[in-house]
Amino acid sequence: QQQVKQSPQSLIVQKGGISIINCAYENTAFDYFPWYQQFPGKGPALLIAIRPDVSEKKEGRFTISFNKSAKQFSLHIMDSQPGDSATYFCAASMKGTYKYIFGTGTRLKVLA
Amino acid sequence: NAGVTQTPKFQVLKTGQSMTLQCAQDMNHEYMSWYRQDPGMGLRLIHYSVGAGITDQGEVPNGYNVSRSTTEDFPLRLLSAAPSQTSVYFCASRQGAIGYTFGSGTRLTVV
Image (cartoon, rainbow over all chains, first blue to last red; front, side, top):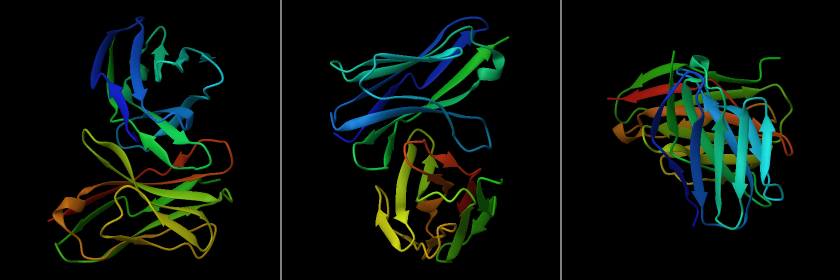
């Protein structure tokens, strides 16, 4: 119940295309869902986050879609660029705690 | 403003040796955590702290100790290194509802 399942493991997208990464969870006590972006040799950096009281959040080319009933959330990267090539992690945090449960990561490669 | 600083960046240990991974943050954050990152397994929580003098275990605490004597520092101690502890270690800090800020990591190899 503590797991966050992330897919796909790797993704190759053409420049200008849409990258979609999916995550699913079981525990309905999770109330904060961040996405992190990690470049090789660097620590993860917060990209965008959502709470379950909204179904979508957009920041620039990055959008989180949240489906509370299905217990799924996804990251959409519009107009994907080679500079977006990185590993992306979804995470979930339980209400009242600051512990994150991370997905296993998606390695995105955007072809020029 | 340095954020979260981890030292060393790289370390090779022999099985059975002990060492301390250092982590310091200058943002006056209450919450600090240690994660390990392994291929295909994402980031797993080792230990965390909700403030000076308060620590608790995460998912994978065995073989590691932590202490939090000040708000700024949160060292991670490996008591007797094992090859299974070969990993990349990240320290992170957080304040309130803002997401965690991660350090740049320590790549540890145990031979």
